[in-house]
Image (cartoon, rainbow, N blue to C red; front, side):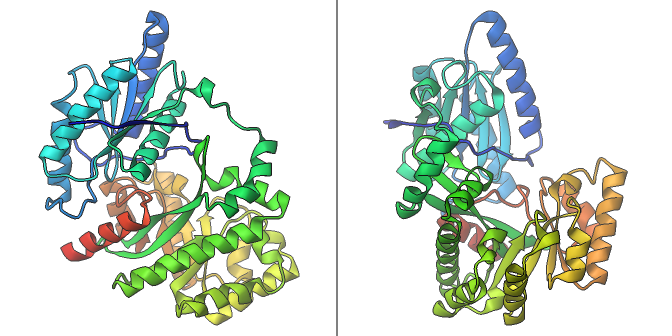
Length: 431
């Protein structure tokens, strides 16, 4: 088999992933092993590789049940690496390997064996990203981000494996350089959307997707909104960027509905966009132009600034809600304005902060807080969605507490548009 090797720059997008395969380390355990490997490599002046493997779980021709597939993938990967190497499950279709081989050529050869082993299981679209300690970074999170960015490039280029570019050959642009480029990035369509499903907790069936914006920077890879929205706001391109993302998201929603995928779309909305008079009518016009009902769109509002809204923002929010657009309060329970917002704004749903949700099986205090917030939402007639669900135990606990909806890596990571269609069809087909 021929392995095509390309190179990608490290991403600034933090990887936040969980585990659900018995017998394999999860992300937290993998990061602990990675920290140990870094300390040993520094003492011994040695190196190692980090591999991220997209197993092809969402391929249409998989024909295997999820857990059966994951077990087979894990066994196949283990059979190609040394006993001293660490294999971990990170999310829906991604595995990580901490590889004692510390050079690019050796890592590529091992990935070739992994790809061949997975293809022998009948899996399609297998891809991998590689980063090397001491070349791409000397820090664990940065190594994982570099491998994640390389994997993303492999998916885009439809290549089997991509190796991250040496960090010293790709110096990070300054904030000033990023701000100068953001206008051109909008025109050149460097902003992309990934989608994380929102499901009914009891059945696991998808009911909506949250659209997550990323800047695919040519040097830095995928950047999260926290690293570019403030730049767009500062240079005056926030409204243009927001409208492009709304147009892209709704166009995909129209396509999905035309193909029989009955989802609604949830979008994080920067309050700055609503500072412009008539913003509500622009958004409603986008829906009307695509023959989408207003209730097919949910706009998520973050706590920051909601306690002191301008009259223009206030007016736009009420116009949207009156027309049927759903308003959602994101990260509920963390911010200081949450209760006032529930009282003063036409909020339809609340999304529980992942920091509380993730600990409800370990902390009685967090379980009590989440239970109280669910009860409050239900009494006020609001839909309640739990974020950050990373295990079956957390899902079960939420069901016991009366939560109806949720999202997190236990169900699926953020997926590309085509991956989301396949994931949704597979879930609905299994129901």
